[in-house]
Length: 212
Ligand code: BEZ
Figure: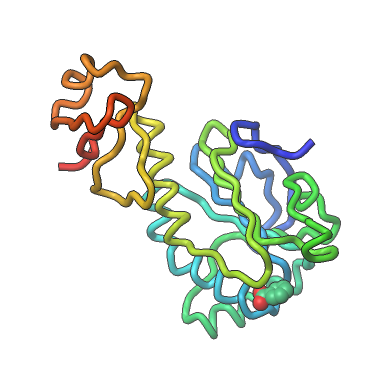
């Protein structure tokens, strides 16, 4: 059955450009971005994997590990990484899973034959330290992903895991957030001492609780 939000992310063993891994052991207590790309030596994928390499400090700040996967073999990944480093002016230092037998691709439902035959689409799974799937995205081969959006979602996921809040449309760090419907209006001042606004009984906002 297809994976859904809140499901436990399946474990797997894999060969990667950083050596053989057991996914759970590799993930440790970090958040994980597991993302697939259709194929090595293709233009959009080259820019995507380079972008993730450049964003590694931003992922690390958030305790996030990144790991890529496609059905190409290890030797192909190793050769292609040289091109990514050269053309994107970066160093890819996170693992690329070689998945020619489609173990990971099938486990995570990354092959959508009506979109691209036999290749993984651009799937993104954000997995929490509790191993549960927090977000799933699927893009077609022709559209490179926006990794600023991935970071933005991680910020929201981490904030909303810690406080009884939700983040509104287009929210970014530092902007007001929505008080969860589970919090009674009379309890807001104690829980959110920075103040709040009642726009509608169901729409109450407060400054981001963990920002000065
Ligand atoms: C690309 O990364 O540019 C790409 C990959 C597979 C099919 C089409 C484009």
